[in-house]
Length: 228
Image (cartoon, rainbow, N blue to C red; front, side, top):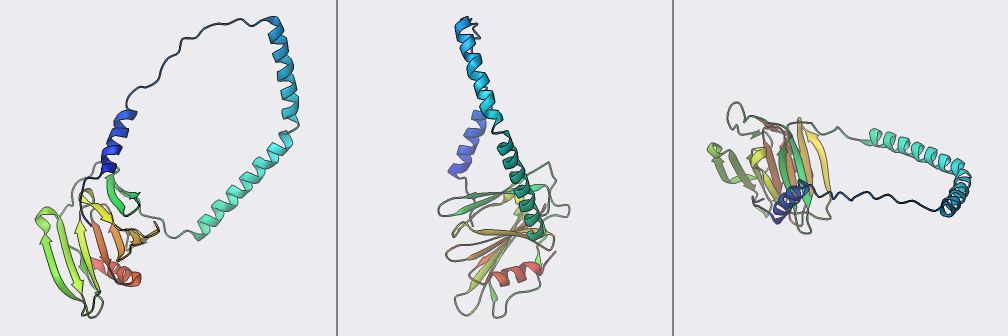
């Protein structure tokens, strides 16, 4: 997961600037007087159209009723099957999908202050057996922390912690499928690429990524054990 400035951001900036321009064009209004013969003909056409439309009113009303009923049933089914909703906070996650990767960034919904007690590193009470630390970078002075684990085979995973305003994540994507749920009062985003399973946790203070070629269940177990 790397930080970078993408072409998408440049396009978004251009579109935003373009929309601020007033592109409306005022057309001069001109008066025109139609002949009496033309007006009589138009009245007959309008009267005939009104009579034809009246015959379709019952059908249109029944269609409207059916659409309304289907909408209500759909909303009920969604409510029943929905999982716990994502937590609302100061930050909103922006997801942009491309052919070979997915970008995740975080936009502040309102003005916020930095963490009150400085950059605090999460501790994880659960690490899968046979895994050991192979690299650790504690750069709390610049609000960044990472730790990598590996076992005796070819399995490994990495945990990265940073601030939402600093997070611009570039992760792989497979079939553009993803899941969103909640873990320990933190919003969670999960997807898979051709190599790794990726889990992103975020709240108003931190973003934590857990990524590796280990099962989804293990990523979730690791995330559930996270504590400050």
